[in-house]
Length: 286
Ligand SMILES: NC(=O)c1ccc[n+]([C@@H]2O[C@H](COP(=O)([O-])OP(=O)(O)OC[C@H]3O[C@@H](n4cnc5c(N)ncnc54)[C@H](OP(=O)(O)O)[C@@H]3O)[C@@H](O)[C@H]2O)c1
Image 1 (cartoon, protein in one colour):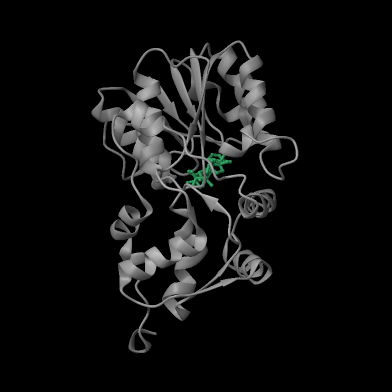
Image 2 (cartoon, rainbow, N blue to C red):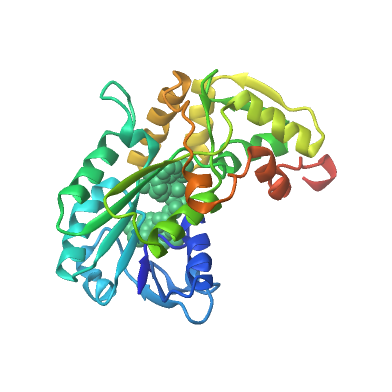
């Protein structure tokens, strides 16, 4: 049995489908059963809350591998639940920033969480994806749709955005194939890009001009007003963008092709698949 936490997010939900296709038994942890209604009938649905480890003991029983997507502060109690339930392996979704040096703004708590897993009695595999492409739907789509303009936090920094489905493909492979215990994998997309180049890709995809302004303060204020997220996650986002601006995320890893056998999808591929998110709202539609 494979347990996936945070199964309603983009990696978790894709991973459910991949594991079923690979013939695995899958259990998902959700906070609300209605949000798991779209999963196939054979998926076991369990209600629990990662902030309340006392709700999780029975959910971890009989589980061979946990795919753990959680906030770093939730990891230590979850390790204890996994140890008690004799889970064989934790595959943790960490972040690329967990491997940065100590001068970086982002990644410190994620590295602490990874180290807690490495010290535990449970076998582990750690995945460190870079910034995922789907974030740009939340960061930029509302501005593109309403104003054809993007205020951006990223400056001239380059990074290699990865599509959530490619992270899920790596996760499925390391869960179902032997030889990945004790390994830490960085996961990136195939291209180094600036935010400005990514906005130009959106513009080409929707065949519209989109203005681009490097305006970190305006972008932060706009995001704070629009995104409903825990305050510590918003702080983590700003720290991530600070590191992005100084090229700490400018890394390319071979994990997607070497583990999945497929070239990672490009930002252009993702834009074509998600074009509806960016098509501008015409005055007649307002
Ligand atoms: N997004 C990125 O670009 C990125 C890049 C690298 C690493 N990561 C790492 O990936 C992890 C997930 O990040 P994300 O922002 O992309 O999230 P996400 O996968 O989009 O989804 C958030 C998920 O967490 C679940 N969740 C939130 N609080 C929960 C709780 N208390 N108990 C149970 N489930 C809970 C949500 O479930 P509900 O349906 O119940 O709300 C949802 O399924 C983080 O650790 C992050 O550091 C993300």
